[in-house]
Amino acid sequence: MKLIVAVLAVILVAGCSGGSAAKRRIPAPGSVGTSASSLARRQLSARQNPYDPTTFTLGVEKVLDGFKEPLFVSGAGDGSGRLFVVEKGGTIRVVVNGVTLPDPFLDITSRVKSSGPEQGLLGLVFHSQYASNGQFFVAYTALNGDDSVAEYRVGSDLNRADPSSARVLLAIPDPAPNHNG
Image 1 (cartoon, helix red, strand yellow):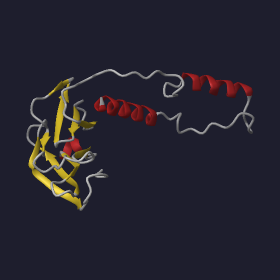
Image 2: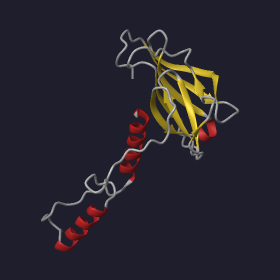
Image 3: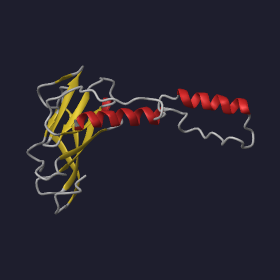
Image 4: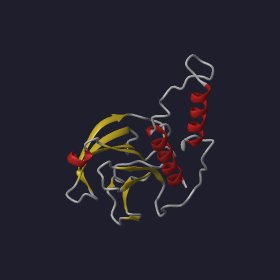
């Protein structure tokens, strides 16, 4: 269920942030330069806006299952269409054409402390030039409790990261098991 909610949130945010209508300032009715015909056109346009929460219906549909505590899903922005699912315990799974690959993209369970409710592998972001440089970054709770960010690179197999490429960029001591994100 968490994965479904995350996917819906990504879809809604991506859909709502892309339209120019949301960024355009429309003068209030009766303000200078507002005619009845332009006001009617704007009202019609607003009714047809697919991102207006009063004009669309939201539903839930199971897309994938079989994950262990999924927290996040992302695309790499490399044109492959693959999805990467972050699991709290320390793995990132790859989904290609609706099928989860058997081997994880990255498995850092040996580096991740996930016993607390807000601990674990908590985030993933791909470098803006991932398609050419293969860099990505993960946020996680280290075994000693540190809130950590590390850089990794993809391996020769584009569906597997190179675990030996790990470079810890940030490690902040955190004595509590909460607020690790």
